Image 1: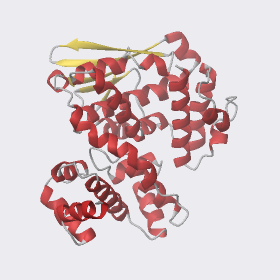
Image 2: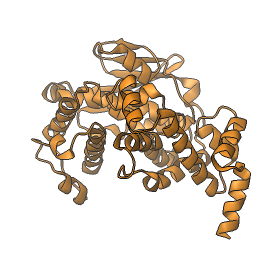
Image 3: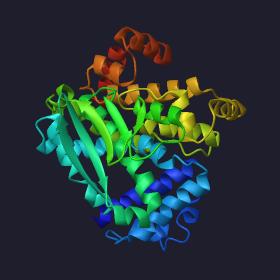
Image 4: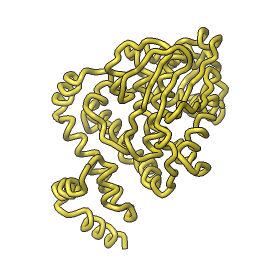
Length: 341
C-alpha cells in the first residue's frame, strides 16, 4: 500500500509544479518532504498526511478541480497500469475488474466494484463515510481523480477515445462544462457512490498485448524527449512536456491543456506568443519527435503510428512527415536502419 500511496503523492507534487507550486510548499504541514519521498523505498503515509497534500494542492493552485485535472494529466501512468493488467486479463472487463481491486491500495477511503445493469456495466467507487467526513479533500479530489483514471484505463485498453454511457457523482458539481469536457458527457448528481457506466459490448473486447507494444515503447522514450525549459520558454517547455506525456491515443485540445494549467485559452495563447511560439507549433514538434522515435523502432506499422499521433488518414501523416524531414516515413526508417547497420 505504502509504495502506491507514495507514488501518488509524488505525482501530485509534479502536477502542482505545472501550476508553478514548489513541492516543499505543497507538502507543508503534512510532515512529508521530497527527499524522504524520493529516497525511502517504502514509506507509511497517514491518511492525514495525504489529506494535507490534497488540501494544499487545491489551495495553492487555486484550482477547485485539481483532482479532476490531475487525473486527466495521469494518462501515462494509467497506461503503465494497463501494461501490468494485460498480462493477467483476457478481456477489457477482466482488466477493469483487476484494476478495481487495486483501488484500496491507493487509499483506505475507497473500495471499487463492478455492477451489471442491463446493457451497461457500471464501475462504482464507494467511500467509507466515517473516513470521508474526516478527510474531505481526499474524498472529493481523489474520487474525481480515480474516475478519470478509469476512463483513461479504458482508452488505453481499447485504443480508442471512449465516451461513457453515464457519469454520476454523489454531489452536484460546480463547473458542469469542465466536467463534461473531461468525461465527454453530462455529469448527473446521484446519491450513493461515484459511478461511471460503459456499454458491455465495449468491455467484451479481447485484450491484445501486441497493441500495447507502442505504449511500452512510449513509456521508455518519454523521459529523454522531455524539455528542461532552460533554453526554451518556461511555459512552452511545460506545454510540450505535458503533450508528450499524454500523447498516446489522441491529440489533446487547446481547451484541455489550458484547463490543466488552470488558465483560460486566451491566457495560454498570449503567454505562448510572448515566448515566440504557438500551441499548434508545439503540437507539431511533439508529433514530429514521436514519429521519428516510433519509426526508429522499426517494427511499428506506419498506419498505426499515424493513428496514435492523431491523424485520421495515413496520407495526412505522410504529407506532414515529408514536410518535417523532406522524406517519407518509409525512407526515413530505411535510412535509420542503414545507419544503425
